[in-house]
Image (tube, rainbow, N blue to C red; front, side, top):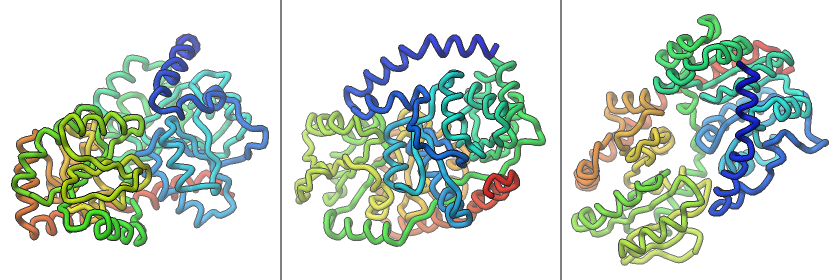
Length: 422
């Protein structure tokens, strides 16, 4: 079964590379560093590394506090971070700089995986969330590399898909030393698809352990005072295709009740910046791009953030925040950063990837879920009219984050049992 899987993956590589080329039309970074994806790395690459894999920006952001914890307590450790996307790569390099080594994860074919392992000789392999690549996992086991999946989550639909290939999944799971899941539901699903009960533990979600430096809060307050002066700031973050349209169509209705309204739109993917700008112009709203350096004025409707790495500061500058990826069926995005900063948080109905968090904040009155555009209008107007409502929602959000922290400590204790840090 593993051989059949590998043959299929080999056959798909030309099409995968063509897809990278296609994506590079709008995001040129996808055209770069293809050799890394095939397992070719610099001869000077470090060896005997502690290796952590985070697919993209969201997983990388969640991983950073764990990396800082390890760097503080094990300063001599050589750390390797892999990602899959260019945006994840840029975020790792921006935040961690030269304190870690970063490369792209190779495709899950034996020749690429073996070159990766031979190049870096990991002493420990740690994979974030739900990256189950059979050849990679099996090769770690064959090379006696302690392997863990942390912050693991598994949706019901993913669980059903993995059950279609039980032999190869069981073979891969046999090589895993431990799985630290976010919730008991995740634990049950991993066991259902073949993970050993003894190896799966519910340790919580490390996204709750988000760290918000005081400098980030201060930067947000500065942006609020100097850039968004006297405006009621509605940050709409991590938006996907077709989401911006929803907000642009209700903008005028809300603007009638909130003359000082400023929509700050932060698209999830950089390749969409120009498309979102065109969409704003099509709807006859006045838009200022952040990268332009132009000042907003009383006529500005939309401040379009076409830069990376500023989202936490923008949340600190917001009067209210809507977290996107939740008005279209993409599974939602992390609302905890906005809550931790102290922004009143709103999100939409599609939160499959963050179901436990969504249920928790609703139960604690720590955020508001809107099912459609009409509910968004009513919620924004209610928050605008009642400052005490905004304050209470923000305080409940911060309290919700704080009471669920602690996963990083538990995960570090699990990883340190391998003696890989010495």
